[in-house]
Amino acid sequence: MQLNMRDVYDNAGEIKEEVTPWLSGHKQQRALLPNLQLLNQHLRANTDLSIHEEAQPGLYFSFLGTKPIKTVKDIDSVQISYQEQNINGHFFIAKNKEHSLLQVRISPAHLASVLGETEDQIIQHFTSMRHSLGNENAVIRLPITERTTSIVQPILSHKGHSISLAGHLYSLMFTLIEQLQMLSHLSQCEDCQSKLFHAQNLLEMPEHGALDIKYLAQKVGLNTEALAIGFYLIVGQSIESYRSRSRIKSAAALLRQNPAAKPHIVAQSGFSEAQFEAAFIKHFGVSSHQYEQIH
Image (cartoon, rainbow, N blue to C red; front, top):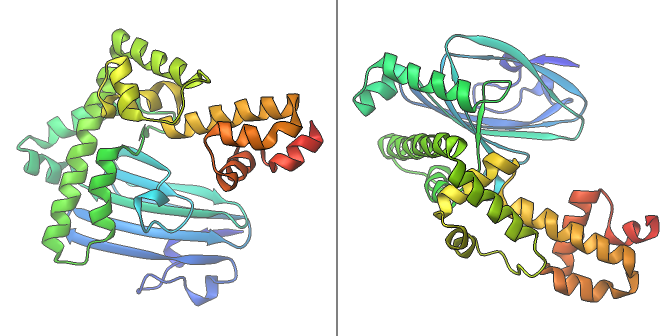
């Protein structure tokens, strides 16, 4: 099934009636200034879908999730990209899957005027970043950090004047630009990367108990922001996700050795029983009970 994004939403941001057999969701879009827009949209597919979409030129600061983005906890990843011209493309949503997007778009000229630089300087800067830090789709990825969280939440809960919302968006973009600078440094600094690998090794140690990022950062000699950004750079996932996966893999190995010791293994993992089962299903696709039967 193929759809065009232009045919999905009505003027109120609701899914058009004729599309509801295949899609549900919403779209909230605000043009705060001529070249500054905020988008919050959610889609859930009732069948396998290929959706055609067009994107205008500009700088995109995007937050992705798999359920409606109402709080920062609903965000799974951060992406930054620069598009020189209009682009067209398709993205696929499998049946019963969800796709959510909170996105800020700003023109290079507008950002240049805010930062007191020229448009060419902004374009050159982001083009360079895209080439050195972007993936095959020219997208740069960042983790959700404590600082990002504190800035995104006021945007999601904002109910005041558009001017104050624009202020929150500027603050968010400036923070992400600073994080890009930090990411660039970490990608080139051998000493920093050595500290990040040390942090990874510490997280693998069984005796490393409850996750304390501040302590871990102090232990390896980085600030918490650099640790979170750098860890995502070298490992490809957040510290929290990596630690959770590491702990559940260790628990699975212990379960294979002695299934009868499950209550002790759960307690030792640091998870509650509900968290333990959720982590098992997430990482192995089956419950711990089913895992025991398989292994």
